[in-house]
Length: 369
Image (cartoon, rainbow, N blue to C red):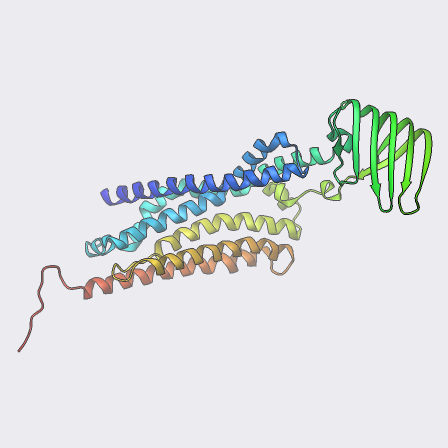
């Protein structure tokens, strides 16, 4: 049918144009953020490209949802602005007839959004988390390059190693400056070895000298040692715990805790939100050529961000135990679905009334004397 074909073509143009623009903007923002996180040592600077790719994949369902919503809103708004809806309603078509071409265009993207939110989101987050863990678990000795001064992760130590072997976790001709509260230490050693004891990491130095300086007391102490162990850092507890965002749905269901159910409810909610937003995108836009399109545009933008933010907040509500998993899905998404259907019905009745009361083209009013 020509009507369906023209609607799908217009939806496709708006959708791809919006997706390209949104992807370009958010990738630029995420790239700047990735460089910032790499500069503070959250992951290896060489992995910026991988982190950016995984971040884009994990948030692709949101980009698709927003692009689909904007495409439908733009198409329906243009149809009202050009009075095409009046013509189609006059020819016997209703606003409900937009569902068939819209769903025919949108159903592959709805499936993609569901798959991405349920599986691609946790997989990409797991990859990012693994890279961060692998880099954060490295000791301060591992992070430095031979022949260069390097500051430790907490900013309290400066290291210099003349020659090191990262595979053996050892180094030769080591120089360390440590700043503590009211005291400064300068340590030199011929060799050093990095060891992990339970959850703590120690740097074991051999055949060296330590100078402790107390500027407040104007004194210093020189200590020579054959072996000296210094605690470098503890393994962060967060790295030892599995995160809900990197768990697959089967794993979340196997451990139905509050945080896991909140994460699962958010993923299912993202898929349901995409369908509800499709209905709202058809029903909300309405433009009177005589009054302009600003009012309809404001309503569509506010409705999208309000609903989307509530979906994001639902994860915290379920995780905090304020509401159960099932009740959250019913209380949030079912009313939006019913509201969207009511808006469509109201738009249909509004269009019929407008068409019946609109004067026939070419007719002239009859004046009575």
